[in-house]
Length: 113
Length: 365
Image (tube, rainbow over all chains, first blue to last red; front, side, top):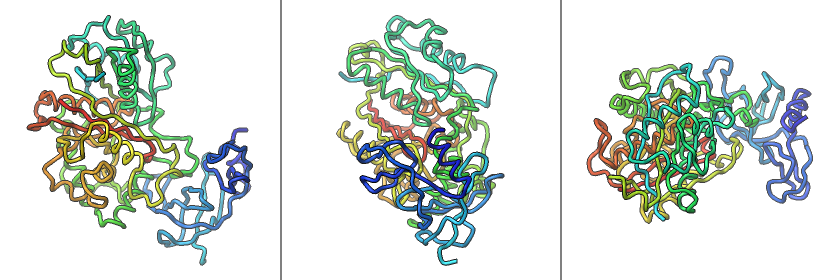
């Protein structure tokens, strides 16, 4: 199983994992076998669910409708769906992690809810 | 060793046809060769820029048009493929390996390059318009850019395309009301803020300084640079208010040319989405950060006289080549109805995938 398939398989169980370099103490995302900073071999590590919104938008494309945002979690950036009325810079948590049509499908909610 | 572009060709951009990529590429190469003083035996390099999966494409094309070049390959760099091919051709000539390199960009409408499947960071919002809308929202919020500013870009480029017979929207006219009232795709971007992927082909011939003497109007590449910052949306700049690869590539190209942005008379900018043209104005340095919306008040440089990607359509591997062709034709005084007065220096801006890669080329008479 390749790296991305592994991430998706684990996401089906409700967790997001990324490569993590123990030497640099940094997540490496999108997932890779080696650290971008020191070239060490990296491990998979669960990404903490607390983050913040970097940017947001609204998609009107059939099958992909919804408010979406770039969330930053421990230095990794990923796009997910936001359910609440939230502002850029606001603290969020990954409420739900799943796979839809072979893509990561993550729901972000405000950390204050 | 200086490098010039001497000849060019673009065929009309269309919806999908039954022709193969090699057949489409051949049409443009034969057309260029018939218009140019270059002899087939003198062409010692062929680069085909395309996102097509067709293996051995450049050698198939070589055989189809009767070339036996010293060097032949396909170049793929998503939407930035065309100018990547030109950069490779330039390097081959500068190094002395080749003296005359043909670069042909070709794409089918259903190109595999229309979407970057690899980027797991995009989640289910994996269309290019999604990342473009994030840039637009951010620009609106930080700098007060409005939908009207986007619509004015789209209107300008579609009107320019009405003077370009090769543009897919050559015979389609749109009003400001139609553009600003069009269906929303990903807010604030509407239908006519988004380019239309299409089929197309475009070619240029690059030659060495010694070979250039046989051509009447060589146009010199005085600056050429590329920057690559990764592939995923995870690598974009923290504040989303600019495209880092464009800033780096532009700075280096201007340094090579010993020129500044105010020296540019005409520019072809990568307006895959209207907001990207506004951001390009700022990152290239035509205006200050945040002032992209004020650019339409400036008389120079002329921008996207070809019609841009918005008006011409976007045959991915061919776009950067056709952008370059437009600047070459303008500097040669051969741009027909689109010709601008006193154009001496032009710039090409071609980029890919959320701005993770940009090429800048500066051309001079």
